[in-house]
Every structure is written in C-alpha cells, then in structure tokens.
Image 1: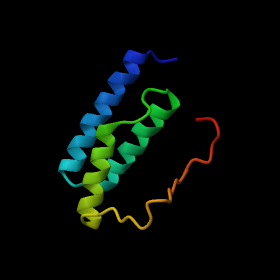
Image 2 (image 1 turned 60 degrees about the vertical axis):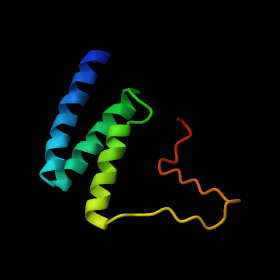
Image 3 (image 1 turned 135 degrees about the vertical axis):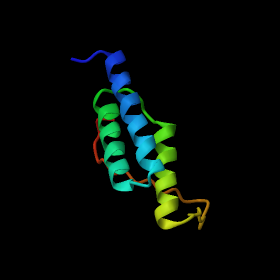
Image 4 (image 1 turned 30 degrees about the vertical axis):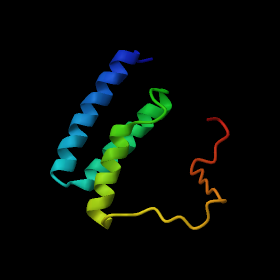
Length: 89
C-alpha cells in the first residue's frame, strides 16, 4: 500500500507532465494523463473533485470544439447524468 504522501507526489508529477502536453497541444496524451490521474484519485480516494483537471478539460474542449454555452430550456427541470452507474459512491 502506498502512503498518501507518495500518492500525492505521483499526482503532482503527472500533473506537471499534463501541463506540458496541453501547452504543446498534444491533447491525446493529455487526455490519457487525465484518465490516469482520475483513476488514481478515484481508487485511492484522494479527492472528490479537482479544479485543475476540470480547467484542463475545459481548455482542451474549447480548443477542439470551440466555445460552448449553457442553454436553459426549463428552470423547473433538472438533468442528472450518472456515467458511472455505481451505488458505491
């Protein structure tokens, strides 16, 4: 079992690599690194959310697909998508 400190060091190392890949616009590698980081954080229960990863995903999305906008259709409805389908979290 890895210590929390060691896991956090690995996360920081991968995030540094991720920053470099996004700067080079190497999005395929960047998305792989995001997937790896997400998996580590999920499996080791490090963080529930990560604003830095969210920011990087937004940067990639905007560069690939252009600026997106939120469209409200009916304020009385809420749409929730659970991509995991697990009842464990």
